[in-house]
Image (cartoon, rainbow, N blue to C red; front, side, top):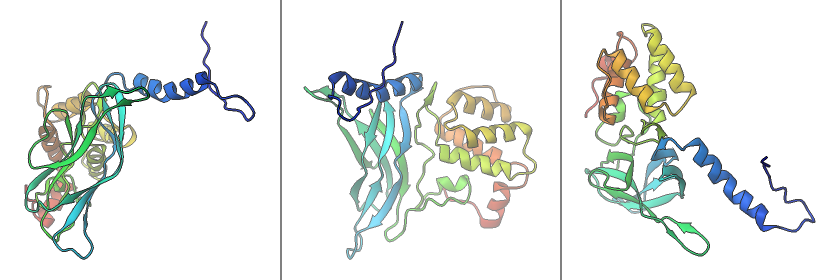
Length: 258
């Protein structure tokens, strides 16, 4: 027979070690049960913006808000951080680097580092976004459509972020919600498209297998593994089908620059 004990911390009662241990173990245990079959990746947060330094033209900082990742069976939390920035006209990747953890007498400590690098993420690094910023420009995140997420200059590219998900990393819920809204506005969308769009709107994150099976079946391709870039390209093709939505937007405004 088992008992589930929830500490009450009632007024006048002596604070017991067992109560503190129960308080410590509950959130971690719940997370490990719910995410046990998930692949390492981003969970929440990490909004990225660029801020110019007041009164100092040409100098600025990239601001990365607090976030959470699932990594090696642990939810790792980060705090908001500003990183000085002057690397204009260069392809910059925002990365979270996680180092091996170690034990002290009181804590398990995992060092981590938010960094900007000119290149692809390395070992033990997770991409949080990428951009190429012109001096004096703002870092844009108000995307016109799905294809606009890959505009080369002054636009935050979120298409390569590895989000944690069951059975494998998946793509950004922001991208999938954008795709879903484009599909829902397309009167020629198929029933399969509509069902997948509703799934994207109501149940993030969409698992990698579900995403792969949908895009492969929808485009008549054999089921196989695809990179984030290949998934994104197929979502753009599907969202632009039917002569409405994104396809019409591209004819009106011209193509985005890749």
